[in-house]
Image 1: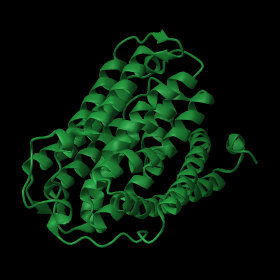
Image 2: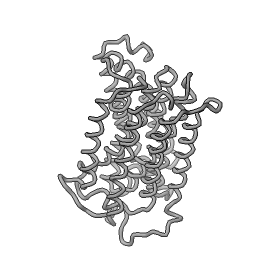
Image 3: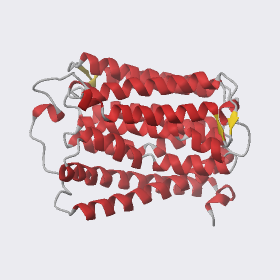
Length: 351
């Protein structure tokens, strides 16, 4: 049965299909981290660059598939809240990974200035989204001015952050990835570069296909459970499409690549937020920003606040822990839980 008819299936079957798609995303994300670690090793690219541009772009494929399908089927709230949910959840995943790995506060072992630059610029983009929702957007061709500006800022800031380390006068002596400890050789390093890129393409395709499935199944589950598209997009699909980020962050931290972990999460956020323009172009109606309201404003600001908490930790650069995680990670978890509690009680203007 086509995924477009998922609403005709029992909700139990849809939940199983949803779990299966999420499992594929988990597996593909885990393999991609090891493969791209080997690409960085073979090509001498920095792990910040690989995490931000390569891994960040690839792990955005489920969101691309979700935004594309949700906008075409006329559910822009599901598309936008998936992107905003992923932006906040991705930051939460750094905190969760910090607790699971549990050696030092993750912000105490990140030394590259580009990480702080990425965090600052990502906060600006989220603030732009919150501001743009309060204004009346106007179409310029197929796109609204607001979504076009957000896409240009997201991709421009990604480019700016990618080259920041080469331009920066900041330096932290005696520190680096894995706190200066010897880092093991990548597991996939024995493969040829051509074989590595072929595997990147294969697992990237799996991520896209799984994201496509999640869009249709999630929309059906929302309808069957009587939930709003906003909360389903933010919490339900946002969590599922963030599974690649969780597994890649966990793997990156375990193999001693904290810069890759932060670069991947923040790079993914830049790519994801630029996809607002894709949803606007594909949605047959008014500019999607005009359909949004307080729920999405709070969602965007929640993501910015979570990034700000980690930015303070990066600037402090101290190994202060509680419950096997950095104090900043614990604060992120608490604030995220409070934010979701607020969102769950808010009306949704776009639903």
